[in-house]
Amino acid sequence: MWLWFSKLGSPRWFYELSSKWLPWLYAAMIVLMAIGLFWALLIVPEDYQQGQTIRIMYVHVPVASISLACFPLMAVAGTITLVWKMKLADMVAKSVAPIGAWFTGLALASGAIWGDQIWGTWWAWDARLTSLLIQFFLFIGVIALRSAIESQDAAAKACAVLAIVGAINVPIIKYSVEWWNTLHQPASSFSIDPVAPNPPEVWVPLLIMISAVYVFFVIALILRTRNEILQRERRSQWVIDLVSKEKSV
Amino acid sequence: MNKPVSSHAGTEISTWQAFCATLKRDLVIALKRKNDLLNPIMFFLIVVSLFPLGISPDPVELSKVSAGVVWVSALLASMLSLDNLYRADYEDGSLEQLLLSPQPLYFLVLAKNIAHWLISGLPVVVLSPLLAYMLYLPSEAYWTLVLTLLIGTPVLSLFGSIGVALTVGLGSRGLILAVIVLPLSTPVLIIGAKAVTDVMFGLPIGNHFALLGAILALALTMAPLASSAALRISVN
Image 1 (cartoon, each protein chain N blue to C red):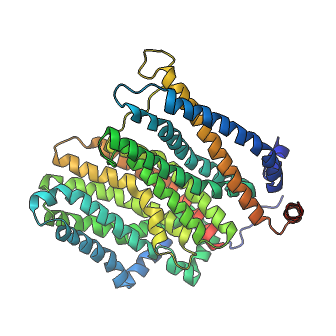
Image 2: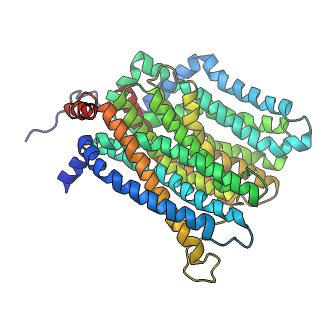
Image 3: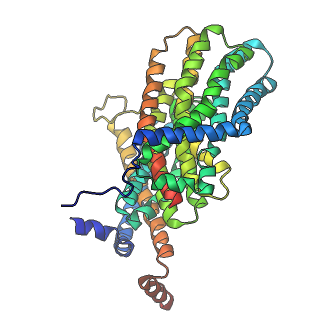
């Protein structure tokens, strides 16, 4: 098992394996995204309260759920960097920070558009909006710290520490803000009961959209990590071979 | 079997002695630099007095925002004085000596953080009733303000220490410290300011103090560990 673990840490191994994964991931994303978007935008019935604007949910919820997953992911990658000094983990941590910032920004933007329709305002100092905004600042802090430290090794460790501290803080921020002010609706649950507030015809496409956006996130993360691998390993023989092969083709 | 022999037998220093020595050293240095001692307090005074100029001199409006104004100013004052925490020690090499010492770094960092709080946090706490009076905070909320600041400002020093430790080796830090530290400080600000506002409305505030105390306990136990790790990375 440990052999497998140390193998996973090898950037080259990851690069080669992810080359095999990518076509499948692309296919899965295209299929899921096509079904999900078609279903969500054209088939799902209008909400009796929110009308057509309910369709914003099919973008907002997946994006927001990923933005919440990014910080813990970065902290886990940071812990692996600190404990096992695995190079690949830091490459993932570095790649996930800008993606996380983007997804948080997108969640805020799509939420603002939705909020404009439902609450009649783009922005409110509501608990979830505020905690997401602070999470956005935390991402910016990690990115800024990474770019400020020149030594790659020191940057990796410093960002790992900050990511772990931030990840401990995210729930504290979330709860303190929540209890400070709440306007946002509680997260709705999934239910197969057809008369429940959220019948399957509403949440099944949502589930498909969530999976589609998750696959998109994984693809974006893999592509960024692959770039990072090529950049950091540019002097090693396998990258030189790879590039010369690409050129000759 | 050989017993582990201490390299400096006879001059063994206990952790507690090292803790006290570090605390004393930082306080002595601070007391010798009168300007560094005064600057955070003056900054706090100036920022607080800017708010009435920016908002309105009206007592009704000011008393509504006074708790938040004092809290935000305390947060900024604490952050701006953080730079002294490790900077000079880093430059003259005494930080390296601190890292090399046989005592656990956790306690040495904690001593430095406590010194920082005594220098920059405590004066703010002491001055806060005066400023609260100037901002027309209702008198029944004075004690709450002082107590929340008393529990909250150590947390600001402890969290801030992590940010300084991460950035101490950088040439140009300026704003990056603020970008790292300010988002981490939001829970304390929210709870502290909310407690004072709630007292003004006659609401119970026991839970606020419980939460602030919990955050302080967490910060006391965890933050020096993170600061130590960050210092080891930065000095390297």
